[in-house]
Each structure stands twice: as C-alpha cells, then as structure tokens.
Image (tube, rainbow, N blue to C red):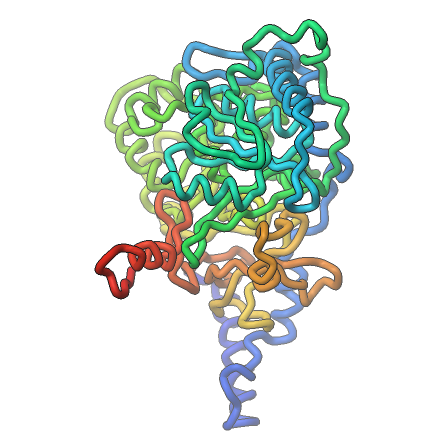
Length: 498
C-alpha cells in the first residue's frame, strides 16, 4: 500500500534509470546506480536515527552494582518457589566472582581476557553464574548442556576457557585440560572461608572497561564448526541505556527469562530486568514447552515484559484466546528471532488493544536487536510486516556491493554503530570479510549481515530473507552447509544437499 507521493518517488527513480540506460545502452547492470542524489541524501540523512547519548564510561558490572545499591530489598530474581533480592543475588554472585578470582587463572585467548565457560541448567544458578563471571571482570561463554558432546568440547577448546562452571554432579561430564571445573552450587552454598569472612560477599575490586569483552555466543558456521561472536560491555550498555530508548522500563516491571542463555535474546531479557531494578522470572524448561503452564506462570508472576520468538508465541496465543482465564498483565510484547506474520495478531490485538506490541529485528553480531517497530491496529489489518527503523546508536545501510540501494531496491542489510561486535573469536579472515570499514563514516566499522532487505518509502525496513542458505528455526540460526558437512561425515554418504 503506497501513498501517491511514494508512487511519484518510485517513478522518478525509474525515470533516472531509463535516462542512464539511454545515455549508455551498453551499461552493465553492476554499473547502474540504484539511487538518485535525492534518495542518497534521504537515506543517509532522514532515514538514519539521530545521534544519542549513553553512559560511555559504564560497564554491565558497574551498572548492576549501582542498581543493587539503589534497590537492595526488591525482588531481583525468582524461579519456582525460590527468589532472591538484589542484595542477596549480588552477594551470591560476589562469592562466585571472588572464588573465581582466587583461582588466579589467566587466559591467552583474545586480548588476554579470561574466558569462563558455563554449562548450566536453567534455574537461578545460571544467572548467578553469569553475574559472578561478569563481576570478576571475566568473559562468559554460555554453552547448552544438551548440545552434542563433540560440539561442547569444540567450544571449550576454541574459546580458550580456563574455567568451567557446571551443576553439581556434572563435573566429570566434560574435560577442561587447561583449566579448572567448578560446581556452581558449591562455590556459593558452602560457608565462607574463615580466612575470607564477609570479604567473599563484597563487590570485587576489579576495573572493567567499556571495551572489555562481556560474553561470547556461538552461532552456526558453514564449515561445520560454530563461530564465537565477541560482544563488549559497551555494546550492551548502549542497548539498555540511552537518551532515546524507545521503551520505558522501570523497577515495577516483571520480565520473563524465556530465551536459552546461549541465545542472545537472553541478554536483553536478563539485563533488561536487572539494570532497571525489575524482577526477572526464570521460566523452567518444562514450562517453556507447555503453553498452559506458561500462561499460568505469566499470570501468577504478573509478567509485564514478555519476549517471544513468533513461532513459539502463536500456540501460546491460541491457547490464551481459547480459554476464559485471568487476563495477562503484559505491557510490552516483544517479538524477535524470526520473521513475524503480523496478520495473525488480529484477535490478540482486539483483546489487548492497550498492549505495546513490538517487532524487533536483530543479529548476534550487532548485539541482540537492531530495529524497533511498534505494531498498530492498522499494521495488523493490512498485514504490514516491516521491521521498523534502527535503534539509537546504530546506523543501517542497504547495499548492492558497496553501492547504496534506493527505496524499494533489494540489497544486503548492513549495520554500523556502537552495537557492532568485536568480531569472531580465532577467525580473522571471516571477521575481516564480515566486519568491514563503513564507507559512509570514516573510522567506523560495519557488519555485513547477509540478510536481504529494502527501504520502504516511509524509512522503515522490510526484511526479505537471506542471501545465502542460512535458515532460522525457532530463532536459532542454522547454516545448511553445517548440516551438509555433518552428513558427509557419515559412512556411505558420498555427498549431500540440504
């Protein structure tokens, strides 16, 4: 659906293309400019989000510790019948941090930063472990405990992890030749050493710079080996705190931790709650898989911020609409991880017209979320499936090679700004290929996503799919080349195509 002025703009660009071809009938398609000068000004100007301020000098460690001092007695986290206040959560995380620091193990990987792998079940210990690593000034590497053994061992070796946190009784499941394995429960459940006393519960005196690595999340790779994306503290700080934040989160919010901790949406959920003084509700695995149990939990905990992968939400939506139970308390329903079919939300929006329904497009390499789109009743009625505009501190370009694509012209979606990752761990060639210089802002880096997109006349972005064979399954990126590679390893298989 286009307004008349949008059609006029499209016809103007068509006229521009025809003039170029008339002047040079032998022109190659690759030589044809896909934008007029007016469009270039519009794309590089009006379509870009204005610069904004964020706490440049802060880290996730400093922001969390400041929140603990501000709201020590508020409930910070719960799982089932267990819950901890901010002061209690901070104390347990400090014990983990101080015990890890006492191990005096340093890593040679990355910039000399210490990598700590996490192989933890889904409960409060998972969050305590993450915060313990962060407060020690180390880098956490979340690994799915259900992943195949060889994949786990690969990530442990590739990350250079010198410490590993597991659940009690799982210490011997994996080997860590170059480091120590600790059961998370034993680190903080034992009585503090007499020699340490209350010092174990104190905030570690560790300086963390904004450019220090915060976490490494592994995503699927075409070679059959996953690749680790290195994200720095500053990338997450500016995502959660900036002067033009499109959300109004506060300490009264109750967040569900629905995503797997090795899926980057968990970063948004966890720090979204804990850096604003909110209550983080860890959704157990069995509840995640049961829409009826999940609805009961959302009502019981009065969850106000719910993040969902669309394919997970559709079933939850049907169950909720079909029963006559208590209304949900959700204020912000945020979609991410895969393409959203907006037209399916008609009945939901009719029942919850006051709910802020948001579609967000994101990439692990540019720190969770890239765009924001508040979905209106009109969008749902017309089934408008764009992903909105860039979040503050980011810039978006749609390119054909190194040339800007005009409005409506498909091209590769590229992202620049503070959210761009450091790169891929131990993969300099791939890093140099995907993380490149921004041709429009000297000295700035840009990530080439491999996603196909186009500008809409109003400055919003339509996501069109992939330029390669990557697919998304329930939000997880799967490289079909990795599946093909695995099949070729099987006896009797000469070649394979997925």
